[in-house]
Image (spheres, rainbow, N blue to C red):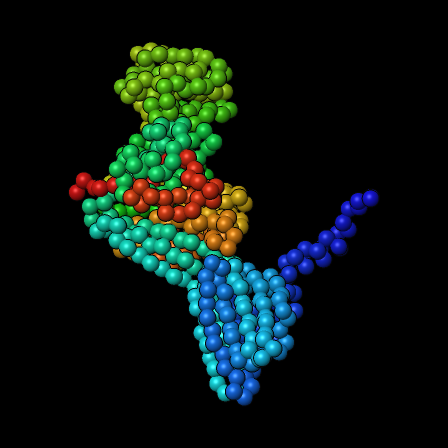
Length: 468
């Protein structure tokens, strides 16, 4: 058999057919059954003396309509092709009674019945939100939602933390190091956290991608002026955060700083601290200076220096090498690193970068393109994790399950932002998601990770007893 490439016109027709398959399927259904994005409507004319009874089963959900007389216009079975309604089946006895079964892909709320002398109408909603909440501890509320819309079902878990009470939200690195991987449940357990969620994006080796500060120590610098959240013992702030750094020698600017605790690139000057590890692991094309207590203690022209306890290493490449080459052991240097905005006066000692922003001043605002995110974050449905701040300064930590057809399909960023607004967020930001999405409460993983098991991640946000 000889295969031929599909002509563009034929490909377009196939695409259109796929996109509207559910509409075509619905068009072939009996006139009595209408399948809309928000609901399924069954309208049956009533004959003299005809009666109807509606019952339900679960797993899978079925709506059963029994009548003491036959129904007209229904096939024995038909696949519907709708996201919620999978199939209908019809049967009748020779003596007259009949049964119509509507089988759904997932659980929906019970339908409503409207009936008069001429018609019987059953309306099954496809859009719903079913929320339950419980108090984990005073000041920490856990919420669980089963919800659905025209796109399908979703499972949402969220925490609402009152930072005015004796709880503090802090950050933790996997294995307490910049290059590490650890399950959120393990990080929660070893920090004594009552609850936790996964945190910032990270590289394959575990290094946070974006700004990350723990207990006042800046671990990594911001990237692309992306959104970040600053945490204080009693509150939170959110803004786009940028970075500036410089090295000064004898009262003058020696060189600007390009970054902190990350691989050194061409013509950059990078600062390495203890958080990075014991060695810089740089190649021989750099020039490095080891500093302790503001004094140069060693010069390493070929890189890969040992990072001293309590000190740091300046590592320069290319055009930046000449600046560090001026320094000799015994010289005094001053390292200045600052974030804009400067949240230190607010008492911020934990900062986590993420993005894009979802909500600003209570209004949906997705800043993905401005923050240089790619389509793997911006487009489509996925498991999601987000953080929000309410008008009364409570903190929201939210997870959405995803990639689980007929259970939880995940959300777009727009849907996630609207969810945060619904939960009361005045400001909100997206965090790492996908298979990383995890929520732990009292050492139990309460969401369904899309990998089928809890993934080891690089960092987490934990809720711990405060010191107030």
